[in-house]
Image (cartoon, rainbow, N blue to C red; front, side, top):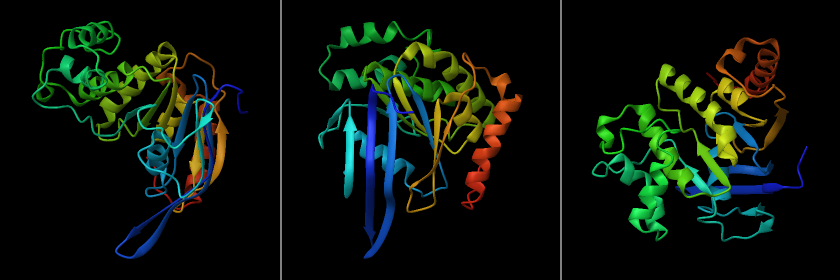
Length: 260
């Protein structure tokens, strides 16, 4: 059910691209919403427009038709209004962990000393305390992703978009990152939208899960995740978890998608 404190709402979003003269429809009438402090995941087959939808919400792209509402207002000027973390960590190799984390704040004009003070206060919960002077090449994949996530969170937007942030990690590291985010999500007090191909990840972390159809993407189903909180990795074997996972896999299977 949609809250009166809706942070994001898209209505009948359509988007197409043209490549080599060919018309490629990416999204066809997507309705989506995420409320205050809600964690919402989007899953669907590759190429169904999940990342395109995030780009539109973030203001990196504009829809061909439909509307996007952020923080209760409809505007085309959304760029810089949300935090956005993509799959690649995009850390600068010549900057330390600490200075990578404060890059967004520096771009906003925050003095470096103040930015570093803000970042240091969050190093421990992000598992980076003691590593602030390291260069990115010395970090594990999981630590690099945590540094990129901290950089995103430091911008202090109420809405954070995550585009497969753990997709490039090995299975064990990914599991550790999911467990870490489980422990952190309640403390962040933000509205989070996650694009993922991992059904377990979507169910474990989310309040709701959207399933998009194959391209052009539209919403096939929306599943409410009513598992108790706080959640833990051990819940993946619970009957309620397995039942919802199978429902989502069935929806994805009927689309001919491959999931993991």
